[in-house]
Image (cartoon, rainbow, N blue to C red):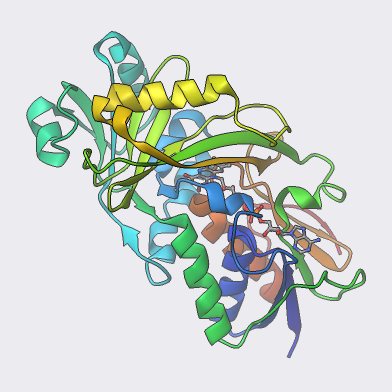
Length: 325
Ligand SMILES: Cc1cc2nc3c(=O)[nH]c(=O)nc-3n(C[C@H](O)[C@H](O)[C@H](O)COP(=O)(O)OP(=O)(O)OC[C@H]3O[C@@H](n4cnc5c(N)ncnc54)[C@H](O)[C@@H]3O)c2cc1C
C-alpha cells in the first residue's frame, strides 16, 4: 500500500493525516519541531469555528466550506457548540448594523437575552447571536489529533523529510514559501489572560472601528484575546499599539479584565495566498496544501478532504488550482 508522507504537523498537516488515515491510507509525518507546540502558527489560534461571522470579511467558500468544520472536528476533539455573540459599544452601533448586513445565520438579541446568555456582558443593549457557531481549544485539538494518529500507527519523525520523497504532502505553512511564491505572511498578535472575575462561556466579538477584537473562553477563567491582522512579516514581537488596543478592547467588554493576569503573548504569521483562500497544488511528486490564513481550524477539514480526494481518488476539489503532476 502507498505510504503518504505528510510534511509539517500544524493543523493542516495533522488534519490531512487524519483524513487520509480515516480513509484507510498509510501515513507518516515529518516535523522537526516535534509534537504540536509554539513552533507552529496553529498554536496561537483562537479556535473559533465561525463561518457566518467570518463571512463578514471573507469570500463565499469560507462560509460554505467552513460549515463542514464542526462535524469534522466533533469526533476528534471537544467542540463547544455555544454560538458566538457579536457586540458593539453604543457609539459603534452602526458597525453592528453593517456587520448584520454583511452576514447571515444570526438573530438580533436585546439586553435581556444577552444577560441570559452571558450575565457578564451587562453593558451591551444589542447583540447579534450566531447560534450555530462553535469553538474548540486549538492546542487540545492538535494534541488530540496527534494522539489519535499515533494510536492509529502513524509514525512521527523529527528529522527533515528526505529531499526527494515520493507521495509527499507538503503542509509546512509559511515555511513552504520557497515553492509557493505567492504565499505571504499576515502578522497576528494575541494574548492569553487569566481573569476569574469574568465568566464568559462562548466567543464574544467586539466591533470597533480601529480593531475588532474577539475573546475566546478556554475554561477556568482563562481567555484568549485576539487578534491583530497586520500586513507585515515581522513576527519578532508584539507592538505596544497592538497590546494597548487588545487590552483596552477587553476592558471595554468588561472592566474586570483590567485585573487580569497576562499569561502569554503570542505572535505569528498566518500563511495566506492573495485572495486569502487556501489552495491545493500538485507540482511533480508533491501535493502542497497551504494558505489557511485566519481560517486554520475552520478550513483545515475542507482542505484535508480536498487533499485526500486528490491523493487517493485523483478527484479535483475546488481548492485545487494547479496540477502539474
Ligand atoms: C493570532 C492568531 C489567531 C488565529 N486565530 C484563528 C482562529 O480563531 N481560527 C482559525 O481557524 N485560525 C486562526 N488562526 C490561523 C491559523 O492559526 C493558521 O491558519 C494555521 O495555523 C495555519 O496552519 P498550518 O498547519 O498551515 O501552519 P503551521 O501551524 O505553521 O504548521 C506548519 C508546521 O510545519 C513545520 N515545518 C516547518 N518547516 C518544516 C520542514 N522543513 N519539514 C517539516 N515540517 C516543517 C513547522 O514546525 C510547523 O509545525 C490564527 C492565527 C494567529 C497567528
